[in-house]
Structures are given as C-alpha cells and as structure tokens.
Amino acid sequence: MSDATPKLIEVEDLRLGETAARYEGADFGGTVSFFITDHPKGEGPDLHRHPYDETFVVRAGRARFTAGDETIEAGPGQIVFVPANAWHGFKGASDEMLQMVCIHPNERVVQEEKADAD
Image (cartoon, rainbow, N blue to C red; front, side, top):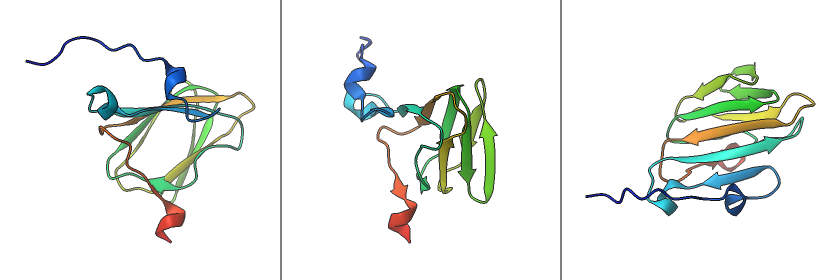
C-alpha cells in the first residue's frame, strides 16, 4: 500500500539561481522531474540532450528552440516536445520574461551537455 499523503514543496526551496528551480521526483518519492524557468531575452540553456523525451510548457514570453537541425519559436499556451536523445536548447526570444515548465519523465534529471560530447 502506498503513502497517499500529499507533499507541499515551496518552489523557492528548489531554486538553482535566478533563472530556474529544479524538482527531482526521486527526492520526494516521485517518478517525474521538472524545471520551472524564468529566462530573459537571449538567455537559456545551450545544446544538451536527455535519454528520455522532454516536454516544455510555455507560460509567458517567447522561446526560440533549437532541436536537431530545426529552429522553432513558441509562445504562451504552446507546448514543445523534444524526443529522447535529440540535441536541443532554448533561449528567451522576447522582451517579456520567458516562463516555462520543462517536464522530464524520469525520477532524476539526466543531462549530457553538447560541449562535453565534442
């Protein structure tokens, strides 16, 4: 029988810095991890990949995504899906702060930086 008690977690307790907070599911008995991000124009992660799919939910601002050989722009109310093992990254693309939730269907975030692979 599993523990059905919900856990209340403060986003500020998960902060990595000014631009992101990271929730690692394994730390709370969960199987999904995610980032909550706030990126100004021109900022965001460089090319990297995961051994699982990643889904991005754009809440505010605009993002310019690079995935493989494709570049797309997404705004509020749009969702971007990147398949497992695809090199990808994104940058804020508008004067409005980019706010997203980046969903990792894994109990831990597993990430390889492109610079490390070269």
